[in-house]
Image (cartoon, rainbow, N blue to C red; front, side, top):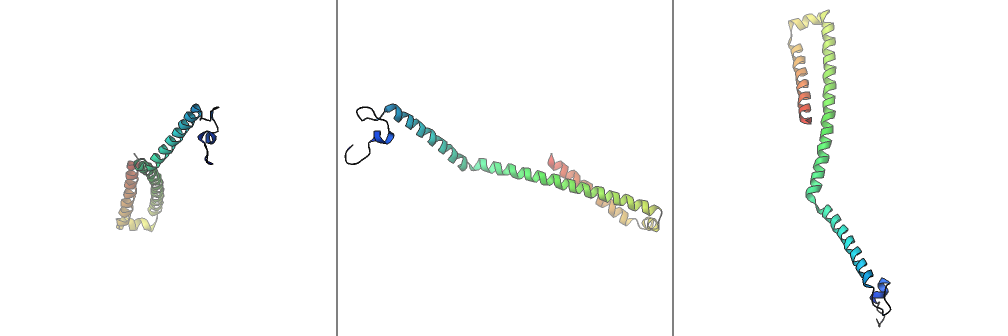
Length: 132
């Protein structure tokens, strides 16, 4: 080409004797460009796929909630075991002391402890049920 412009064959770096571009080289370049464009379109489509990204966020949140439920269940279980041990210890002490007489005369505090213990066990069962 005249006038200082760049000839297509010069740009591609491949030309035949007459200065015409090599068809095979052009086809290979077009094929590579199409492949690159296809990859770019796929990447953009993945970013634009709001439904898939929302599902991924839901799954991550679900896993986080499950982990928190397991942790809460373990804490409740620990508290229940601790409360049971305290009740047993208090019962042992109450058998031979003046506190035992007070419990026999006024069983309401013992009943309150038992109701609390039943509530803790209920919470444990509810948390286990949600995990399944």
